Amino acid sequence: MSDSRTRILDAAEELFAETGYEATSTARIAEVAAVPKGLVFHYFPQKLDVLITLVDERTAIEDPDDPPAADPDPAGALRRLAARLPLRASPRMRRILFREADTHRSVRERLGTLNRELVRLARRALESTLPGTRGDTARLEIAATTFATVLLYQEHLHQLTGDRIDPDAVADLLTQALT
Image (cartoon, one colour):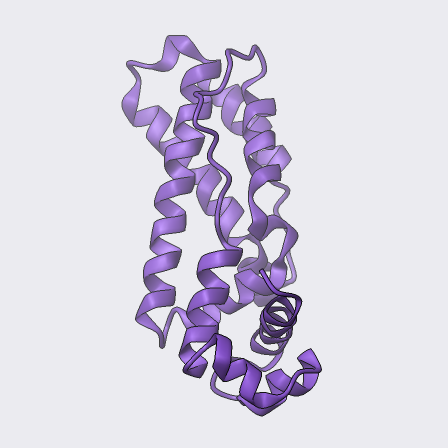
């Protein structure tokens, strides 16, 4: 990926998180990225393409092809999942997702996809570390959904209330409830 393209996406992430998509002009993105405005349109024909690319590329979750190795520590498996989640490292991307999901279908769809991916990965991590729970589909689904919710919504909650939820503490709590 070119340095200019990356700078454009970095600037868009900063500005969309700060002021929102609608309030951010392509001229402002170019200015913050320190590139000519025409270069923004070279990489992204429309401003909406900047938003879609930003959300798609910066919310990808690493999903190893191999199933997780057996691990005696289910909370550790959930913590490792949380560490792979790029949204944990980018509160700005979470702000963008939640702010723009109301007005942009592609962002709303990506948020739904992220939620489903996280539930699947959390369920897989729990199944691999707690083999005795494989038949307990309902409890695993609730635990996986709860963990995914905490990972996705923690920054949103912090913006609304000022409170933070520690995903590591939630991992400990959920796995204690399953064992």
